[in-house]
Image (cartoon, rainbow, N blue to C red; front, side, top):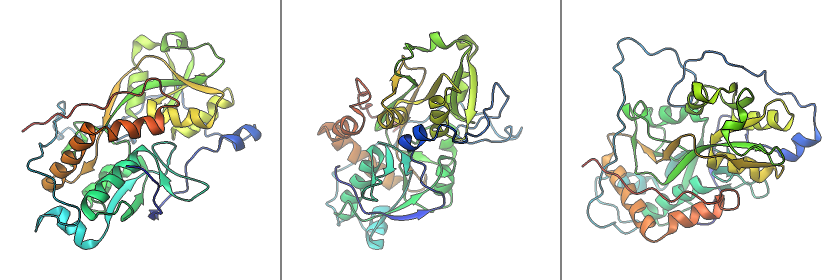
Length: 328
């Protein structure tokens, strides 16, 4: 699961990768207005939403994934009539990804190629179905569009720091987890802060409407929660001294810290989220196929090697690869 790919990309938004050097040289760069302890409706897909309808049933249980069965078919020899055979006939895998999460899913500014731990997963799936990891059409969207891409049948898979939640599982079937993301803190390297308990009464920034925001607003932390459109915006605010810390998944923060050596990732985990591959519920054969690939790569060490390659320099230690959990 190594090596970048020259992508075919459908882009609706500009590259979101944070250019730290430019930020530091432009101290007066504009930052969106900071939102303090406001009341917001929070969606489990990371986007703003209206309050849930009274007719919408409560959702509180996350389902485990679907168990694979039988041996893996050879690349280019997918079972007749299967979802994988349709992808093979098309000649490319269509994958929803991000291009703005450094180390996870981002565009290398020097090569123009998509790289990162999530991109390794996409390439692994393409190799297994088509015999060529480069046969991928990447569809780049904001995180709030991840579920919609699957609902509308625009992609085969979404691999974009996509964690299984009960609400998402109404319309998305997730693979088993390939990464255990922990919610942590990004702080100035010389701040002396090494945990959330030192931030009581101080400004901590995260993306508005995210599940991360829900955790930060827990009364026991006593934080002044600030929300912006995304973690890169929060990191700019941190660099300008407008907030005291940023909170998000450790892999995302690792990318920020890698771009700005004056920051570091600290703190015990505040919450966990398990990243999986998102697919359509009616394509259960594809879900089982991807789970078989993940079983293979857990066993041969490829998943762990990818995580260490991309995140090892910033996260010590890199979280272990989660074990597979099945409901059937």
